[in-house]
Every structure is written in C-alpha cells, then in structure tokens.
Length: 356
Image 1: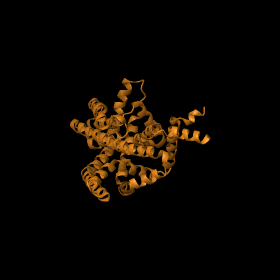
Image 2: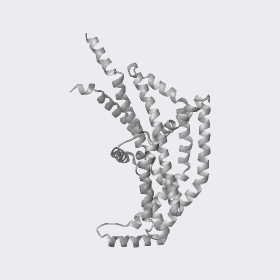
Image 3: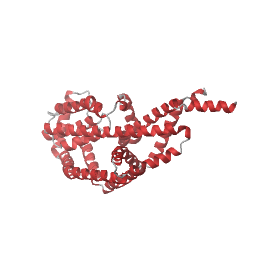
Image 4: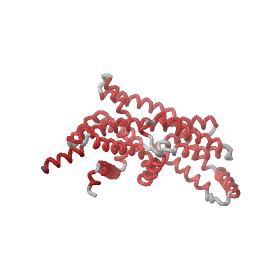
C-alpha cells in the first residue's frame, strides 16, 4: 500500500492537485485574477517575437515598445474601420426585433410548426427570442461603451504584460532558484516546454478563431444576410470555445434571415454554410495551425468545457483549453523528468546508504 505513495505517477498527481488548488484560490480574487491570466497569455503570445528582436541586437525594452506600437496601430485601424458599423448593426438588430411585426410573424411560424409537430413543445418562442436578443444587444453595447472596461483592458493588461515581457526571465530564474538542486534540471525543462507549447497553442487558437470568423462573414455576405459583420465576429469569438463557433453563428444568422425575408427560406443555406465551416475547421484549419502534440480527444474537450462552464461560466469555457494545456505539459514533463533524471532512484539509494 505504501508503495503507491512512492510512485512517480502519484507524485505527479499530487503536484497537479496542488496547482489546481492554487488556481482555484487565486480565482477568488475575481477580476484581478482574470486580468493577470490575460496578461500571462499575452506574454506567452508575444515573447517569441520579443526574443527575435533581441537576437537581432534590439534591446528588449525597445523591442517590446516596437511591438506595442505595431499592435496599437493595428487596433486603432480595426476599431476605426469596424467599430462604428458594428455598433450600428447591433442597434439595428435590437430595433428590428422590437418592431411590432416581428413578434407576429414569429408567432405565426411557431403556430404552423406546432401544428405540424404537435409532439414538440415550442413554448413562447417569440418572447424568448426577443428577450435574448435585446439582452445580448444591451450587454454588447455596455461592453463596447463602458469606459471602465476599456480602461482595464487597454491600460492595466498591457502594463502588466510589459513587465512580464521585460522581466519574465528574471522572475522565472528567481522562482527556479527556490527549487531544490535535485529538481533543478527537471523544473527548467518543464518551464521551457510550457513556454514553447503554450505559446504555440495560443497563436494557433487565435488563428483558428480569426479564420472561422472571416469565413463566416464572407459566407453570409455572399448569401446576402444582413449584419454579416456582427454574426461572423460573434462566431469567430465563440470559436475560442471549441465546437461552439459555428453553432453560435448559425442561430443569430437564422433569426436575422427571418427578420430580413419574413420566412425561413434561408434556413437550409445557412445551416449548410456553418456545417461546411465546421467540417473545414476540423479537417483543414485545426490540423494546419495546431501541432500534433496539441491534439486532444473530442470527448476530453467536451468534458473540460462542461466542467469549466459549471465552475466559471463563459470565461471558464474560454480559458479551459489554455489552462489544460499548461497542466498537461506540467504533468507530462514532470513525470518524464522523474523517470529520466532518476531522482527517485537517487533518493532511495541515498536513504539506503544512510541506513547502513
């Protein structure tokens, strides 16, 4: 029985459990913890670019400032181009749903569907659609126009990320210096692998979401669906949660097409479009942007998302996969280190010599 506690697998499980407890404890800090997590993810995303500048002879601080300037130019360009029409489309959607004719048309179609499919209880669909749409529109507008939220994201996160990029290596060296000598090489290897694999995952993750968003916008524009920019952007952002992007994109697209045409004639083309994007994502985009080591069984992903949703809601669903990547690397590399560096064997041998 006691031999179980000496196994490397038990030690790794204990380490992961401890780190999960620390993560849960930090999550009690609320928005501070979220801002810190975003800053850490941005650090992993930008660190390779800063390292490249540094290798080319540019001082690290100047490299960070150059990257910040480029990002600021891109953000201002995108905001100036897309934010006004985005807000206008959100307001237009809300007004269209509030229009008197919308509820009557939706109610008529609901009655027809109820007659054809009496075994299905549709409930008050028109009221529910109106409630959800108005609520989503109001929330998006409050987020887009909230000075406090913008200040938190555009000032605090870049400020913290700057110091992580500038002094990250010093912070990490200080952390590793606290590790006992026999675990030094193993810890160094774990940290190195986390930096590489998490950085790759985040870049692939954002690339996949952007591609899904662009494909959704182009497809809806080609079909002539109104508010394609909003729907495609929502689908792209939602795709940060695996498997959710096309579903989230299809639902508002169907509602908007009904408002636009007065019937569900575009239902099938919209379903085909987002099904095609889902298939393309699974067969082309994901295998292209993600490394083989980052692949996970779909059941594992779904279970993780469900647990994260129950614990932290939508934000938990978004952060579930990056955090899982970190913990998987820690578990895998720690186990490999305990086996490869023969730490356990050294300890047992040392104990035997002391007993003699």
